[in-house]
Amino acid sequence: MVANSAGDGAAPAAAGAAPAMTGSTTLADSPLLELRGVGKSFGPVQALTGVNLDVPVGQVTALAGDNGAGKSTLIKCIAGIYQPSNGELRWNGNPVHIHSPRDAANLGIATVYQDLALCDNLDIVQNMMLGHEQVRFGILDEVSMELTAKQTLHDLRVTTVRSIRQPVGSLSGGQRQAVAVAKAVMLEARLVIMDEPTAALGVTQTELVLNLIRRLADTGHAVIMVSHNLNDVLAVADRIAVLYLGRLVGVGPAAEFDRQSIVDLMTTGASSRLGNGNGSEAAVVPGPRAGSEG
Ligand SMILES: Nc1ncnc2c1ncn2[C@@H]1O[C@H](COP(=O)(O)OP(=O)(O)OP(=O)(O)O)[C@@H](O)[C@H]1O
Ligand SMILES: [Mg+2]
Image (cartoon, rainbow, N blue to C red):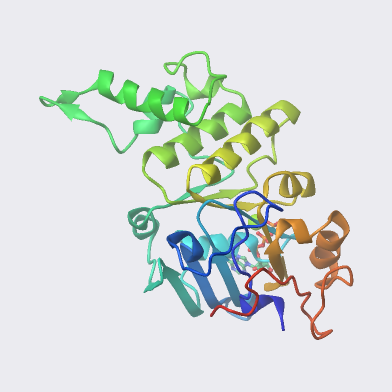
């Protein structure tokens, strides 16, 4: 069996904790997003080939891979920026075509890019409400917008910002990430994709953002975190997927990976430290329901 056969059954929300398998199918059993045979070429460059991946709710799926492995291309195919050249995306089990970021937003997919797209000169409330302003009697309803923003930050336990009327330009990197994530949550994202969320952050800020990512999953969101950083991946992921030269070479519950196996997969596309079904390109990381899907 190859790892990219999507035989990567959902892991429990808490990494390592065995789920009580009742045999009955619940909503949580079916992935929110499924990628089936997704490929993307740019002219002669084959950036992605045959990617099968399940993204369940309540879990952080870490997408790891070396430079040029195809991570950004993959999330752009999900976020509606690129159209896959092959394959299919399914949302709640139904095939979908995501032609634009607006299509993605309408489904409930929010992407937090590294450059964050926040306006430094606007305050936190204004940034969170930008494009979604609440109006009452023809004028901006500042009170209600402030309450909505405050509640969202409170729900995510973002407690380090001094004032939500503070310009975003005065926030730390971690706080900016938190505002961008809070905005995604406020817009009722079901799937939050984060591209290298901690790349520019210090130790304390990284912890803040990782806690937030954990909380997102624990509150029933599906989360995809793109990261080079193995510490972050091992700290927060429930599931790990590794891309190598555009192919998914390993996927499964985080508990089945260690640092070396991830490094092996990222740098060579295989790892002898993981169950290896056929000795071909793929390292196999069997999940609890391996082979039962797709
Ligand atoms: N718009 C494009 N046109 C042509 N080739 C592209 C384009 N975007 C990506 N590629 C190629 O596709 C491959 C995957 O790139 P991608 O940016 O997805 O990698 P990545 O895993 O995000 O890398 P990094 O860790 O450096 O961000 C690379 O070989 C890249 O050169
Ligand atoms: Mg990238």
